[in-house]
Image (cartoon, rainbow, N blue to C red):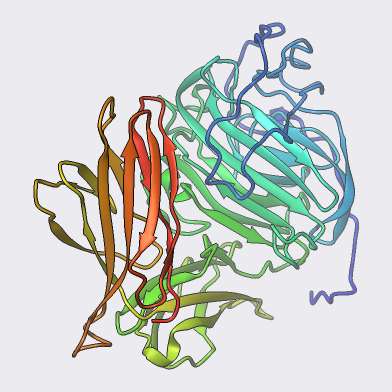
Length: 496
């Protein structure tokens, strides 16, 4: 059936009993303990929207699992619990069905029409329940070492974050951090025209023991995807039951959960019958290149329905760009860009992923590259100090030493000096831009020098002098809890 953009329908939602799934057995206990004090989020910087003080702990006040979580517990620790319906301030389009409320379920998913406490996942499509599943598995936050679930509701988006959560039965030796964002298609974080993002931090387990897992792996795989609940419309990014990076697309063999680490997938769920391909973890910022130096990068895309073949092509026709596509599911394309001096600045590429459904569906992705003229730096450290530059530690002696290392213009040197009780230490640091490909007769262009003085009591002063080549540098400092002084000076490149 050919569906046009004007076609809409309402999906019929029915309550689906957990008995419809192959479940293990659990003995639910009474309300969990009350946690002293407020919960503190872990490191969520890898997610699309990091958790901060504006996010709230999800209140699991529904009737799933063992019933509502302990109302006196600020962390709402639980196993298999669910929320009551949460009204959305926007309309979410689920495969043509407008939704204005949602349920948050502890087991790594959001549902519509009813809450869902089923802890053993299944592959999609499944009749009877509509679900958005960033990671449908047996989440258990009762262990005090486990993190908990947070949410933030805004005018155009809902963000739900499972922050370093453990797995059944009360295990927290491995923990997962993941997030789902839904919107009305107008939110800039999700992307205009898109309405869902799956975002991941460190993913360490896949399966609870009531689902056949042993030490967090094996058994019934966890599911990542979206299910319309009508048995037809769905897509699936993958099912995961093991450590490692193995990934062979939305169908095929179960995959390795580390494939999800620090990735993000954003897409639209408003298409019936054939969801357009999804780019897997596209760049979230411009790639960095240097004139005359080859930059190689790859992209992947999947057709989230089974048995599709996807092809990716680059359509901008940019000079000095060579791309080799590999159709499949997942599909990939590997590109090499060797910019010349005429391409210093920002260059935009356009990639189109198309599936072989009839009629086919396509997704367009823009990728930008920022090109600098030069690609290497040289550093000089002061007398008798340890200098850490781009991850390499150097110990300088009575005379200044010079070390070379390949870097891009976005790298930032960090200088570490010992704790001082008397006297002072002086540093003089200088950078050189180095590009023999573009400047074979005179490849070295020195920057101005940065002179740093460290005084007792960890006072740090930075001074710029000997300005050359129009390069501007800025000094920022801080002291760690052990009293070590670190100095970081990011730099920008102007006027070379």
